[in-house]
Image (cartoon, rainbow, N blue to C red):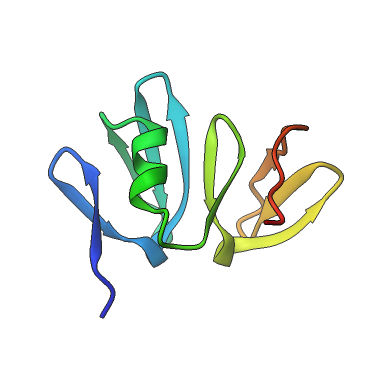
Length: 96
């Protein structure tokens, strides 16, 4: 069984259940597969490091995405299964 990751505020989640994370200044919204959204006082950079052993990408400075929920990548955008779209920064190489 996969280990839960601390997302902040005493909250934990399985990495496989995290669809994406979105920065809001020094806070982060964590969007889960269940549709739940958690708001935590942890920066996106800190959470990105905690998820470094898992298959997550950071297409721009505001978002970290779980690759397993990506539907397609086209036209400078990442499109998720739930139809959310995120811009890919010119300086980011998300294919690595």
